[in-house]
Length: 381
Image (spheres, rainbow, N blue to C red):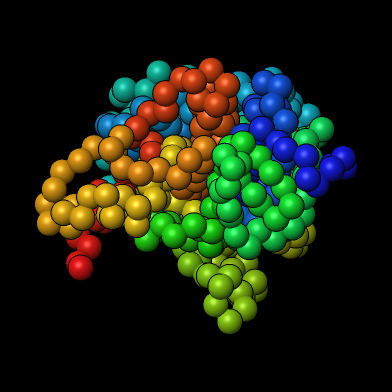
């Protein structure tokens, strides 16, 4: 338990999903005094509901592919080395869901350095004809982690406050979060209210629903097709989800239809494999966030009004660099990982640590402030 609510911290992290927990872990390991805050507890939102699959992203050439390649390899090593008791390693079978996905997968197979393997006969025997006929690739190394247990293990020894953050205040070179004081603040708040005026930053809220089911069908690998399906560390329990096709917002007054979500998940899973004797074991649901350009976010945030006051002609085509913008002091955001939170979190959090502890520059292409200049150009007086 925290020893004092008024003593200064080196870093205060708002948000205890996988990004916040991984950031707390690396910074605590580096010797910094860290406070973590979240009104919903550790992994109480989208991270706790995640499938937590450690799998590569089948993507086109470019910066995102470069990030995901490195992040996937780092994540596999991170979880299997440090949290092997909560990490289930299995081969990963990725099956194309449509013609576009098929072309992408063919190209990916030609260029990937990841080890591939044949699909075992036991898996082939339970796949549907649709899955058998589609383009696919089987990676020798895949993994699924226990989302909630890993998050809780990451923050052992770190001061945690289960509180709602209403506002942030910067005074006397310190951030004030309620009664807490800290030299640097990390916002790992996902798609929830931003706490600061950031009109240029629009995050995609992605509602995820995962179900654990009991079934007599025996699955020996991790499957990605219309949904993700995987065995778990519990005998006879299979995980299905999380899906991006349920775009529910927890900020609306209409409650989420859990039964409808279950039906959709099972219907999509049945397009991939033959499930027998199904019984719902448990539901997990929560909100995740993605960036509009699908690239994750790690970096400082522009103070929009202060920058416009300094450069009023930005709205009329004046060009400046991000370095010339006014940024909120001693503040970093880590966000926008979408459905790859558990893959990207170790990668992003390690670079956050290198930035705060060693002064290593962050990649500007990851900066959430990249959206500011485009927004300012479109903004009308």
